[in-house]
Image (tube, rainbow, N blue to C red; front, side):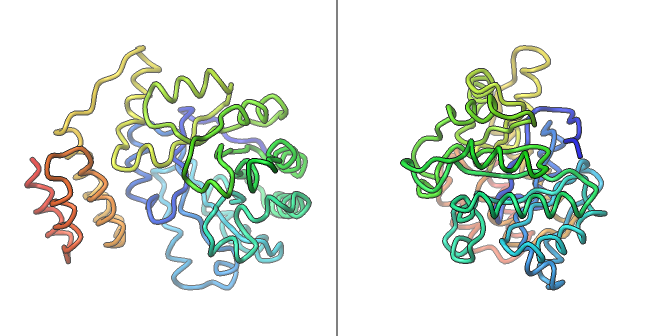
Length: 310
């Protein structure tokens, strides 16, 4: 299956504890061409775990909707993929998460050491469902063992419709600098679209990644936490060649737009608290405000604290 045509070449990256439905909808509204859910355990989903079922919080406003699964058991991944098939337009497989608890399961970026296993998973899942399957990868386990081109080719040959690359190794986690040269290497080696990910925090970063790598899409994660307006700025730049700066007023407006959506879609309180704290970045006395948010017990308390910033 081919990857769908998007209205924009920017994608909101999947982030555990961050990319809830309200944040995804806000990013889509501001110009992201696509937004990916938090990663979901294929094993838990295949067993119809109640809490995991609740993580599938996608809505029509997100189309094309994307659910991301992680796991290493082929049978469970196929079962989970079939469950998701009529709920989204794209299914993403996570082969990049560096979290210790995921690696201990032999999933996420642990699978980068097993390219053949990745190929088996991608082939089984893409053959079992009628929607495009994409893959999220890292460069490799460590700097002296980068195998991203090999793994990306395996994914393409097994049926992946798009490859997203976080340009760090597993050992780097989220530290150090992303090496975009590998994104270019993969783009030059594949026929399917490639999304570059890592260290894009501004319009200038977006432009530079596109120019240096030739990637089809720019996937942005931590760069939009507390600043989904970046998608709007990129959209403005692509249309007019310039963009508006985000002032403090806009920053607060963005949060209240998120909060309204969070209440509408019944987003969990911990998610809202996290985002409230993220939206205070750059304000005078922000640490004191974040402390107050941390002690808040309700949406109303968070709203009251955030209004003091106005």
